[in-house]
Length: 118
Image 1 (cartoon, rainbow, N blue to C red):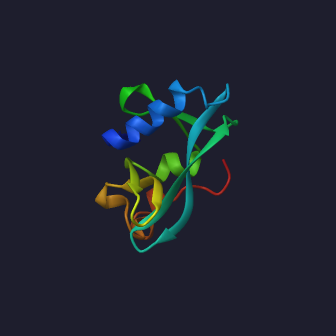
Image 2 (image 1 turned 90 degrees about the horizontal axis):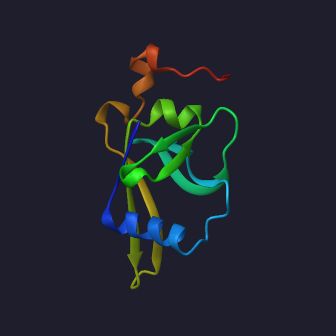
């Protein structure tokens, strides 16, 4: 699993850590929030590490948590930060860049189906 960051995303993550807003023993977690025509939709939150989690290092060694579903179904994530004062939109955007992992890719590849229990 690979996580690429834009400069805007890296700046926001650095700010979070430099301002010591991150509580000890907590990490940024990438989670599946739903599924659409382009594949899974991902969100970013802050959480404690749990058993079964995988710690993934992005560029600049920024740590992220991923559970077994994300780790198996997210291969090349791209993380950006949107700030648009005109529309008042602000937040992280996560996209899967690997074309083979978009849509209903697992229906054609039974070997990619992740078991429901770990």
